[in-house]
Image (cartoon, rainbow, N blue to C red; front, side):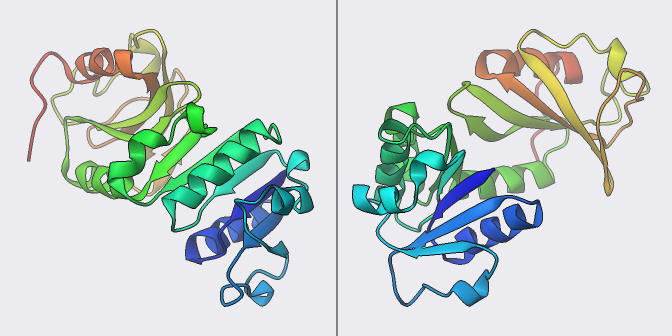
Length: 225
């Protein structure tokens, strides 16, 4: 898979390193000579250019990329790069970083964004996830599919504690994608037994979120810290 990443700061370099370790081909696009340090990620291809310029994206062979990642610290740059990648180069998957919470509403498919990752929202979600037991916490939104990644930590009195995944009547448009148990990540099967304290990670539509909460936690109001 070929991935183009705009922004070679800490975020961009970290993403590049992870993808390279997984065997992917990565191009880092950086417009600041001060931040242009190919030795920091030597296995990546580097391009000193402005990701908001059509000529730069042509030079980057954006049309050959499977994924474009707008990871700069400037929301305006991330939006323009996302729009150009999607509309001018037909990149199948565009992921954009949101730096300021008030700009999050802009990062939609109208700007070419398939998945937006909001730093403020993600940090808030991680805080909620750390302190919330017996409540549904939204971790991420997938713009293209209009689905959300949500998490529920099972309290001891939850209806399906001690029962198997296959016995849980999940609502439509919902999938249990992972069970986090201590330091273990468990790909769920129908025979796995749920335990109190399990963190259940679902992908579901926004309309299904309340139904998921009711099924997993019962009809009681969410527990707030």
